[in-house]
Image (tube, rainbow, N blue to C red; front, side, top):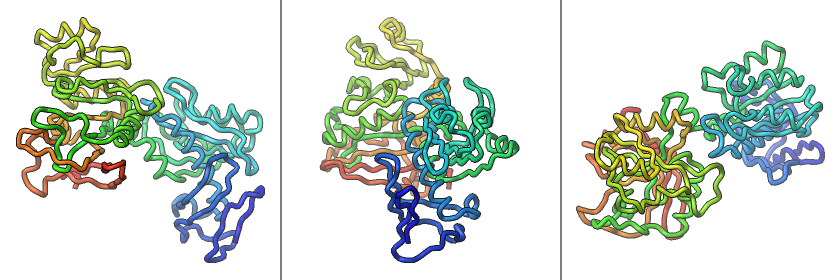
Length: 421
């Protein structure tokens, strides 16, 4: 059976026939083939939940999810651009036609709903707004989006994620009190995933840290002479640069600064926003060397040190490096978050990986494993620290992804600490 709207096939269920109206609560997912009015836009799976959609027809629920997917797609344009604000997209739909769309470009500029309503113009009266995050209802650097929605004459609002920010949340209640139909939670899992770093910051005040490394089969970062270029092949390195392009800051330790003199720039991928901040975290100010690549103007750089009292601090500062003295690793991360760097790529070396893992401050692991053995008791381990004392204290990896990149294998997942069990 097919449902056809404006000559576009919306549903194609070949195994069984569904009436136009049915109980969504009993139908949790469907594989869908959809010829969309949006160029390059397709839907593979739609999932409905009983809490928000049990009163809707299959037709309504499918349309809501379809337009929400478009809003989430627009929100992705904000990757590496919007922090400390979330990534948000919105579309305006009237009589089954998309009449406006927009996304939040960067902090301090108009929010997604406002841009979408401006795109729709006077046609927005009586329309529906689909937005990937609950509309804000309080003044920040810009007016609340609820005001723009009410002024435009919108009759229905569908959002995905609830706003976790207590300073901005509550927009759905404001709109409901004004007589607008509001539905929340549509494709919330997908929308939440887009703002993992923002949600983590709101909950903890700290940035979301991705611990990234290229390792051998025996878990080594470098040889006993600290040689690591290159463990992985070109495909893995290009992928790593794409990840860099999505992050706000790249962090290394003093050992990596000394041994590798890294550039910490995005070279094999297109930048989505400004270049990531280059950061060194060290117990004491590292020895100064004038040829340090972090002193060039390719991107901003700074150092966090626990002790800035040695003779090297003045030399770094004179060369243009910002030196910030902090009491510990968490204080450095909190300062980064307060400076709007919410998604951090931590690239080691082994001692810094160990410090993050043993403090529970890394949240995601990204490994590129090469088919080679380095060996040796003096070579650099990925977790070059004390480690877990027994098996019930190990850190586990959840939601694991694996991908072949040439001869190498990418392994990625969420870090799960014993304290969270």
